[in-house]
Amino acid sequence: MLTSQFLLLGAILFCIGVYGVIARKNAVLVLMSIELILNSVNINLLAFALRNGSADGHTFALYIIAVAAAEVGVGLAMVLLIYRNRRSIGLDELSEMRG
Amino acid sequence: MTLLALSAAAWTAPVIDYHALAPEIVLAVGLTAVLLVDLFTSERNKWLLSVLTGFSLLGATLPVLTLALHDNSVRSIFDGRYVVDEFSLVMKGLFLLAGYVIVLLSSSHVEEGDYWRGEYWFLLLTSLLGMVMMASSRDLVSIFVALEFLSIPAYMLAAWRKRDLRSNEAGVKYFLLGVFASAVMLYGMSLLYGVADSTLLVDISKSIDLDGEFAAVQALAVVFVVVGFAFKVSAVPFHTWAPDTYEGAPTPVTAFLSVASKAAGFIALVVLVLTAFPEGRDVWQPFIWVLSALTMTIGNVFALRQTNLVRMIAYSSVSQGGFVLMPLAVAGGAAGEAALRAVVVYLVVYAATNLGMFGVILAVSRKTRSGDIASLGGLFSYAPALGVLLTIFLASLAGIPPLGGWIGKFAAFQALLTDATPWAYALAVIGAVNSVIAFGYYGNVMREVWMRPVPHGDNTPIVTPSSLQIALGITAIATLVLGILPGVVLNFGDMADLVGAFGG
Image 1 (cartoon, each protein chain N blue to C red):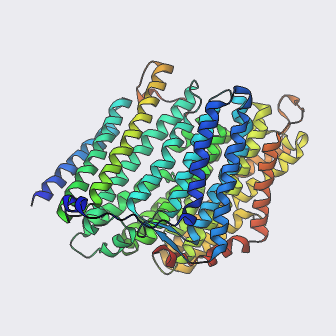
Image 2 (tube, rainbow over the protein chains, first blue to last red):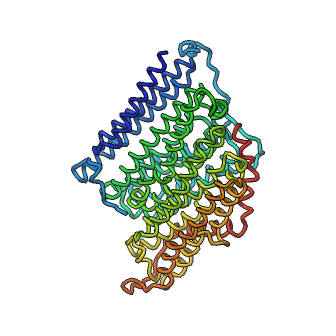
Image 3 (spheres, chains in turn green, red):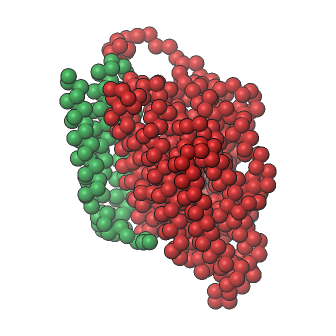
């Protein structure tokens, strides 16, 4: 059935996203990887909603899209903040505190 | 029914119980007022904002009280997606009062800090509104929205000092890990929705069947959701953001994160495992068992080697989180109600004690301008009141009998012994060993306060602003009263026939 293919796509996107969060050192790329995970969630929700024939999944996906936009807004503001203060957005250089 | 058919169907407005929603409405009005008043006040009059914030929080506590006194019936709105029961009222009261104490703790800090004051109060109130909503959410969508509602302002608060590199780092680490955790949690939620065909927690609990067709999917979903909240409550191994964020963020914000934000994560976890996942207990019980044992132990071991006071408190708060998880590890069995009560009692006591701890740290650092444990040397000789208060809070955190912290630990161990399985006993032993280890670092701070000489012989007394004094008074009285009259909190647990009330 078609649903399983959507779910597979969602799972692959999720794995790429998790890999990106773990492997990337650039703050913007990490943010993009997180967006990938959120979109894999949306694909899952829509696939399930179509299979189940209910509207809950659509509603949930809409909420996720809206909240993700707010998150990216805050995230990019923070990336700008560290760029202004240290002229770099490398996450591995963020090590003021240790222990 | 397809989406098209749904959109064509007649729509009827849901019946809204405004009394049940009154705390949220008061907070929403209050935070809008703070934002507007901030626009139209001059720099000189910005102190009005902290007063307005404090009154909004106290104003929101009133409907919580009237709801609690009105009758004991459960109010369920939006088809059971938003439930006001005794459990949620106790937690709402805790969030609002903790928020009020944080306003008292931060007012002098924010006034002197020369940073964006209006926005500080606005974001604080917004985050508290999210927490109050979290206490009532009984649906995946509303839990998700409440979680982001409380987290996003908290990310910004952590990065509050825009030009301070350490505050930036605190904010970025908190943000990236927090957003990643909620994304993982959402993936788990999407799978739960897929099998249950509903986002209501009650429906999900009916659909979970670990022997059924979708057992693997559901097990994965439960683990993902628990991992998401493990980040939020900084359980080891998902705690790596906590020490850096706690150290780098402004101290009142650290108090806020380590008490209110953490409690919100815990209640969401409690609601989920007890309402939605009782049939999945074979998956989450061992998982939380391991998380709890690791969290207590690793938090303690790292706390032992810290020289910075705030960082030590950060690790101590990680380790205290392990004690809150401890009863949850057996919550699926016969000990469910005892575990729930233990979590609520521990969160209340921990909030009072830890906020007091941060109050003393804020008062002392106004003079010493240092975060080192050594800067507390001889505190008793020049500021006896603060020295005694600090000792009370440390002793309560360590769980010494006449103080509040002891009741929290007692309830947690009681839940484990109610379960009476070998695993529960093993976890109780780990917990007992850890509460002894914790004496090591709490005792070390006490030794500085009482026995060490004052650094540089600087004996000038500490001037504590009145708002800080009130905050210290509230938290000290709460810590003492909870310890001497444990019935005050243990009755909350009785009053709430909690597990029954969840279903709404």
